[in-house]
Image 1: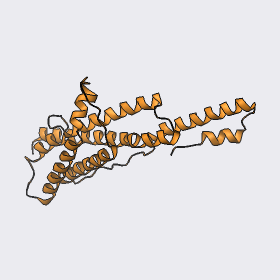
Image 2 (image 1 turned 180 degrees about the vertical axis):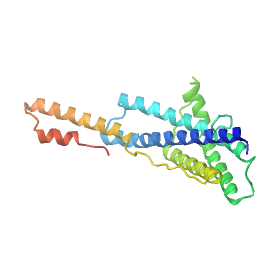
Image 3 (image 1 turned 30 degrees about the horizontal axis):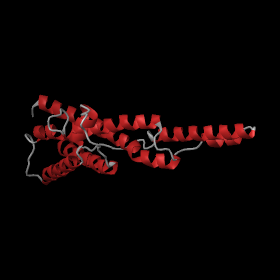
Image 4 (image 1 turned 135 degrees about the vertical axis):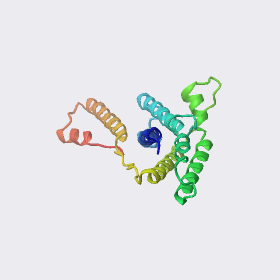
Length: 210
């Protein structure tokens, strides 16, 4: 087994883990964003919208890097290296290739390449609005986890733990919600010429969303 090729495969596997993990974390914010805006009855808070666009672009770029064949850490680049050194008649390899084919079809249908080029990359002035169903993107990302695990099992008899701190980006919503409630309370107290008790302040600062 060629050591240089082995090293290249290992690097691609590690980078894919990073890209998938980053996408999983991004999806937490992207899926909860419209739910949070509805909960607080505020359609366009500037700071949260800014974060939404940054996180959205990051998720699109990560998926682009995973699924575009010419990208250094793409599934296709890794597949081309791996198929040279494994028995393609094995059932596990056939399953891996079928799963990859399924994910690539989903990637194409979700128009990630077009969104990356017109909304994230070149910012085409003739671009049309593109809506993204983040639940569909979540399904694609879960397929990405399965693809990576499939080939990692074949090569290294290992799987990646896709465990995340599921509250990592929800804290943004929690902090925003606390801030809104404290501002509302301050306005209310100013109107009533009242003062906030320690218990009220404590309860407000312990609020979490959701």
